[in-house]
Amino acid sequence: MRNGERSEITGSLVWSPWPLTPPARDKYDLVIANGLFGFGTDSGEANAAVIDACHAVLKPGGRLLLGYSHPGTFDPGLVDLERFRPARISGLDVDRYLTQNENRHTFACFTKVGQVVTTLGTRPIAT
Image 1 (cartoon, rainbow, N blue to C red):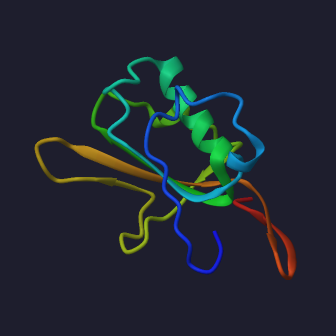
Image 2 (tube, rainbow, N blue to C red; image 1 turned 90 degrees about the horizontal axis):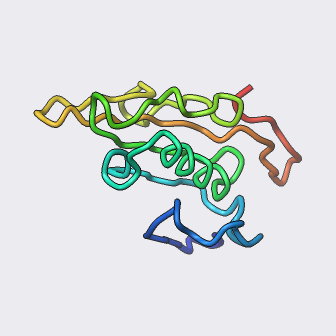
């Protein structure tokens, strides 16, 4: 995105055209995947496909915010720590937040590992 442009895509990550076309890869700073696990992606394989698709579209250093009902609809252990690192949720100073209501919804934040290119060169993320 340039000069404050915003881009938003809604729809299915799992059933998107694959492989992703080059412009879609490494494009987004943030992906929010909320309410998918246990509501359409009901198997470990489907959950892993969501994580793979999120990884493909995030820029290196981009954030992934996963929202899921707790317990049982998603195993955060599926997030490959070679590709993602836990990241602090701004304002909460935690990488995982469990809501205090009857739904027991959890939010978990991750950063995509990789090289970020800046005007000053490259720097590793989440070492």
